[in-house]
Length: 98
Image (cartoon, one colour):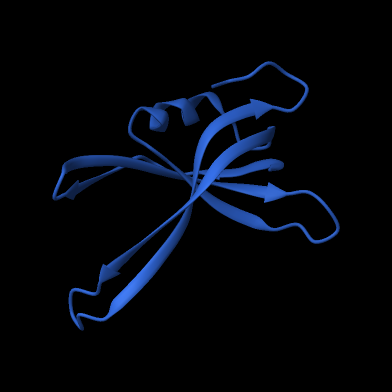
């Protein structure tokens, strides 16, 4: 996906049943007639790689669509979450960052 870095959030550390998980979100504004602001995530060692990006830079992001099912803690209802996990960033017309 190509777009412009719109915002980069701080790294969060979550405690899971498998240990600690570092995650960091960022927003990319897509190109085209109907631009969208898309939230993407990175995890673990890739969190630090976002430090190399700056708001306003044009990027190409390669990502996987991830999803999982979980039980709501209060109601016990099964719910699903879908997120976009980025694994490679390239500045448009410049060498790869990651």
